[in-house]
Image 1 (tube, rainbow, N blue to C red):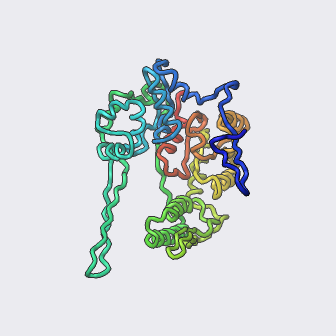
Image 2: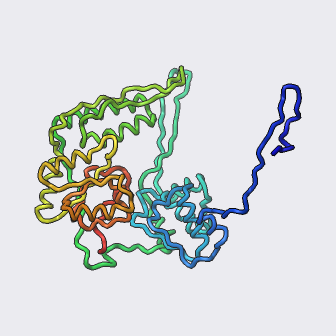
Image 3: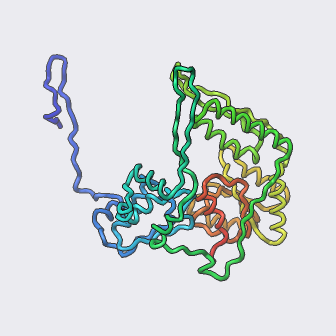
Length: 386
């Protein structure tokens, strides 16, 4: 087909420009995302819209979050469920509240967008203003003043009274079941072995020096955080810690050494591992099966080492990985328990929702990670009605 509007007039050494014409094929089934169809065609069609684990929909421009907003606008009533509404910051409720009741948010003076989010955080959250003053280079110049605003953990009680009191019902498991066993949480502090403590302190000093030299460099922050969380549980084969910075002369990214952590003895059983073995053996002696969580399970995996240490003591242990599809994980647990599993090790993320781990009378976090949502969801997997 030739498109007249796009055809160049032929001239010397030139050929006509040919272009395909496109049009909709009305002979085939028209497909659309279900949520888009609901938003366009089913206004006020539903009596109730129900959303579970709504804390995962707190993002501003996510498909699932926007789907919640569409469902809420198409239903007469909206019911949301979650066991972890807040992860520690007030602004995590901003988008959820806007999707559930945008009229009230606007009435309270919060527009939708970055400005509204900032105002909401200033009103109900905690902001820290950091002022940095750099001395002047000479007497003729002024000191450089840099101001930054950082959000900090915390939420005002007014947030509950203003938005949540008439919006939700807070129910604990004890309120709806009188047959649950007692539940306690405990942080067990373990002193590092002397050689590990020395190596860890050296690693800390190297990271502090790198942070001072490359202030604000995200590659240093990310590498440092993960190294400090990982090293006490795996102080070997960590390799050089490398950061990246842009060379102002060539404008190219260049590597630089952050630290070269000491490579300690892999055959040695360290204090935290010894304490974990002691706790698990005590639990098993009373007939209490256990779940162990660790957050480093990929490149620098700690789960296989833990499995080896437990198996060496005659404990029946298995590792659940993300390779097992979510819909098959419950069956995986049932199968391993029938085969005599006493301890299961996995990343808390892959079981934090949708699974009841009632077999585990005790749960141990070898590493907690830094997500409050994952920690709180995973910690209650075995304390369930059922």
